[in-house]
Structures are given as C-alpha cells and as structure tokens.
Length: 211
Image (cartoon, rainbow, N blue to C red; front, side):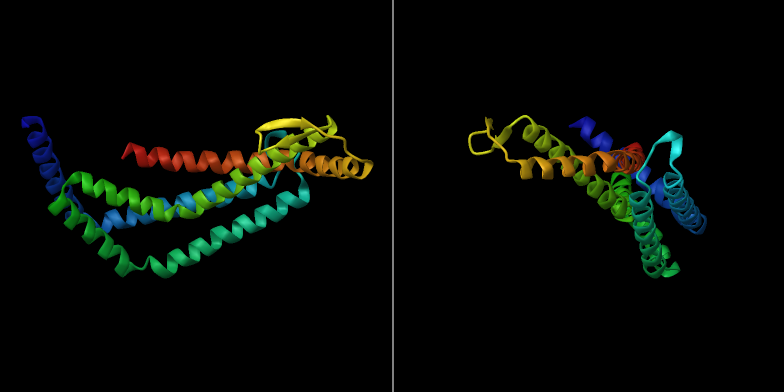
C-alpha cells in the first residue's frame, strides 16, 4: 500500500542520514558509548556497595549481605574483565562500521535492532542476577507457604490440586520451625536485592524500549 511504501522510504532515508552521521562522528560516537557504559558500570558497583551499608533503615542479615555483595562484585568484575578483553578498539571500530553499513543497507529500524541486541548482550549479567534473585524470592515464598500449611496441619496435594489435612509429628514441626526462622531472618535481605536488580533491569529495558 501507499502507507507501507512511504514508511519504507522514510526508514531508508532516515537510515542513510544516520549512516552519514555515524560515519562522520564514528570516533566520538564510540567514545561516548564507552564512556556512558563505564559510568553505568561504576554507578552499579557503587550501588551494590551502598546496599551493604544497610540503606534507608533496612535491617539486613549482615553475613548474608556481605557474602552476596562480594559475589555480586566478583560477577561485575569478571564482566568488566571480559569486556576489556573482547571490546577492543578494533572491535569497537568494526561495530561502528557495521552500524553504518546496517543503516545504509537495511535502514533505520535495523540499526535500532542492532543497538538493542548490543545492549542485551552487554547487560546479560544483570538479567542473570535478576533471575537468580527472583528464583530465590519465589523459593522463600514457597517455603513460607509450606511451613504455614505445616503449622496448620495441612499438606499440599499436587496430584489433586488441593490442600489435604495431615497430622505431623514433633520432629516435623521442629524442622518446620527451624526452616521458618531461617527464611524469616533472610527474607528482607533477599527482597532488597531482588527489588534492586529488578529496578536496574527495568531501567535497562526502558532505555531499550525508548529506542
């Protein structure tokens, strides 16, 4: 149709314009992109350190907070080392050149797709961290539900998709009480880290959608 043809022509023309701008400012574009990412990575590391200082009055579990903070910082450091190893000056120039070629041949939409894929690869470790804490949060919610049913003399029957009545002995109740105490003491810490990385990943997704 006429509208589709007009949109295609507009995408091609806009792609040629973007290709010309990228080619003319390729060095400054790559430098700005690298500087922006370095600033984001440094800010993220500082925020992780901030979480270890028990922000806004949260009473976090001290050993767990320090242990998770160290492991998260290690993940971020490994990512930075891999970035320095793989994201060399030659790779940066080749990436900028490929953006110019993509904009010239396939148009503006394809260029945005390449930028979004680049951002997804660069933030893959954040997605994995968010997924890890999401699974931990779901696990502790499941455990709290299971312990609650235990104290009420109930048991989940997945085969019939219902909750049945069941008598528990003293040892089962003792184990349930110990498990409940562990989950309760760690609950706030897991929730804070889960909320933090969810917010970070949502910010990344928002930037990608704005493209």
